Image (tube, rainbow, N blue to C red; front, side, top):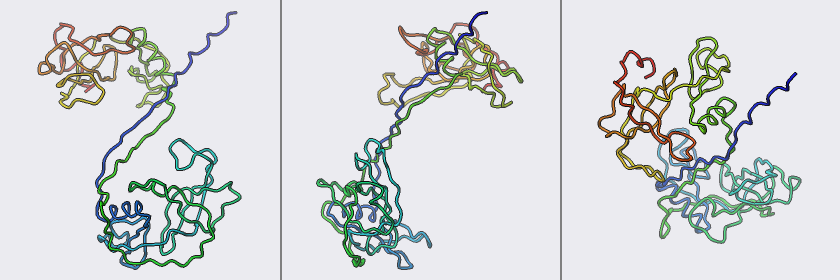
Length: 320
């Protein structure tokens, strides 16, 4: 009796999805963020007299535009909280802290921020806290470094404010970022490992017999697991394409170039790839192409024409 072969190790790798973008601010948000820079907290009064902090630009009940700014206190009351025992990078505090909703004196709504407390036993709903201002303030929500416990008595009332400050903040850069560990799973691990050997491997559905490349682990039509591996290609047919005229950052490819859906021979799902070795305006549906690999590359760098006659439309129309 021979020992069963162990399954291949499933791949894992860190992945970062990042998209910083610049957004402009209207008069209400501009006044709010500029006020934080000046250690002033502004809210807005709605049609029914409620004071909202942070302020919004449209009344949540009537949907009418609102501009009536008011100043509220820098101290407030915790309305609810949750303990964060393992802060993530770039969160307000490096040490464990509480996320709290604080209704500032004079406001009718609560603001979310961090509370610097020694432990969860020191936090409770109804406790009094005050803003700890950042030493350097630029006109952002981070100008509030955090909240801290304080026995300031409640009493501050909302007072009218014209929202006028020198050198007002008119725009911010929102740095959206997501860090996580990605695993392609069993099927795509086999697919990626095969590409390293310059082979393209898909999986066949045992029910409808379609071959999916890249494999998904299950047939999206029949809902059954796909376990039979099938090598496809290497040549294929362009089913549809687009001409790219905008140069992407960190991508060393001159524009214009063509990105296409390519149905590899033997596959029932088209994958995408760049077309090279032919002027962009000569790429067409039905063009027969083959992969071009670079030294040390783990996937085809691009596809080029094989020189064969174009495929008949009926041969690939179901894959468009």
